[in-house]
Picture 1 (cartoon, rainbow, N blue to C red):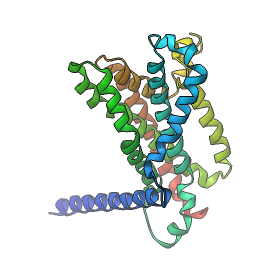
Picture 2 (picture 1 turned 90 degrees about the vertical axis):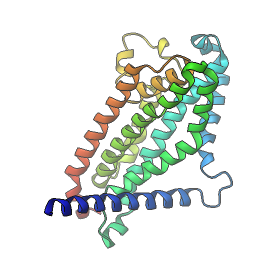
Picture 3 (picture 1 turned 30 degrees about the horizontal axis):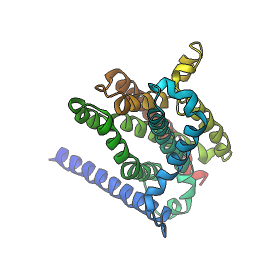
Picture 4 (picture 1 turned 45 degrees about the vertical axis):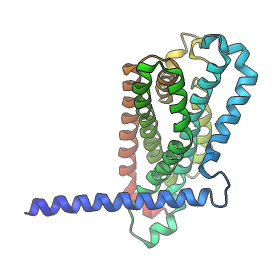
Length: 271
């Protein structure tokens, strides 16, 4: 009986937690696009613009690495930009989420983790509504009939890895920002390094074999390569790439969550 009550209590607490996350995520989306004509579809504007720019500048030089097809290079660049755009936007917003809601935390007792989580969830909704349908359409057009259905079902797997990575980094940097208010300036440099070390506008094949293993330490690398393999190759999903991406996401989420919980007891002294 006591165990049943305790289980129900835990389920109730979990339900309340996710209800709070959904409310905060919905508020975030409404505030972000209030009065906007295109709403969440503005999230496509930056990747599409950058894809066009990369195609004009680098398309002629790099298309030979994509079966000498400019169209395939454009799709590869767009896929990489979709990943990096989601990561940069969601983590940068999560960074300030706890400090930005300090006044609310001082008035109401809330689980602090709901703020970075709600930011990541809001950006995930934006990704699913904006980018995901385009990725599905491209996969359907490029994959043979027998593998298109499997590949479409596999698209969420690297995207799940991307979500885990972003959530883990969000936990880590949002908690560190409570103590180090110069962190946004340093994190801009980190984002720049991650973007350049991700094969977005250039193929991984052009990187010196000596340097390439260091680029593969970038947690976004297997996500981008896995997503491209699923969408562009026309072959069945590469289980090794998907597993590697999910493993990276799980490790980063665990590290971020552990650091967040270790620092959390000291938050209220500084907010």
